[in-house]
Figure 1 (spheres, helix red, strand yellow):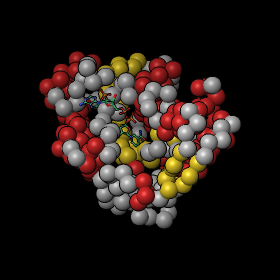
Figure 2: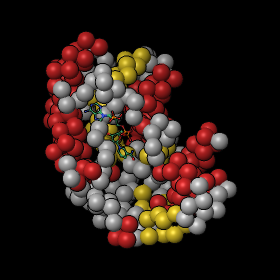
Figure 3: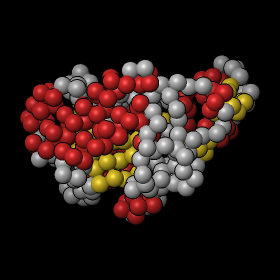
Length: 286
Ligand SMILES: NC(=O)c1ccc[n+]([C@@H]2O[C@H](COP(=O)([O-])OP(=O)(O)OC[C@H]3O[C@@H](n4cnc5c(N)ncnc54)[C@H](OP(=O)(O)O)[C@@H]3O)[C@@H](O)[C@H]2O)c1
């Protein structure tokens, strides 16, 4: 499909990633229909069906999700209703209409106990309620599309369209606050702008199956925070703490590094290194 115009509908289109997908699709000359929660609540099967039937998009990029990782531990049913059943509603409507489905998933489907990057075929084993609900969404997406859904896992996102770690660090440092950051979880800090661009690339290539998309390189949250302060010229008091000391309600994967090689092969390019992407993001914010 590269080069020709595609009609792409985006769910969760006002969220951190959804907003970037809308912009990336339009920047490539595609027709993009942006559905926020008010236009399409994914928990309403009939609304999903009628919206997708009448818009008749070539693709639905499904970014809507329950994303409150810690809160999901105390309201697992709500997380499952949005991420599992909501995805079933979107996938079923896509199948009925003949639209392709891209489901955005998460590094939280893995248990985080690995020592080498997770490939798209690595065994899943979510440890949190949020992770289980995202995995349920993957299962629904694949089952209702006869395995043709494009499932893209990502993680550690920041961007201009939603609250995120980078903006929080800059704000806390600017307020002169001492900052404690977890230093024993490893992942790939990733600019949502780069993910959105890769998602459109995959859609244009008419891909299916599971892909991993993130910026390249790895960091702990402490390394990530240090990079932010270095670029911004901020010098707050920064202390590394363990996951246990931090004590968040939801378990976090200790190792959240997604292997990018198969997707980079399909894209024919490497993902941007996280410090470079961070630099670009921060220069746009300056
Ligand atoms: N951020 C990350 O680091 C990260 C990491 C891995 C994977 N992901 C995945 O990336 C995707 C996008 O996440 P994000 O970071 O952009 O999160 P986000 O900013 O929270 O966006 C999610 C959007 O979904 C909407 N939504 C929630 N419930 C809905 C419902 N029932 N019907 C329709 N829309 C609903 C939210 O609207 P309201 O604001 O009205 O609630 C919000 O605009 C999700 O699938 C998420 O699991 C994100």
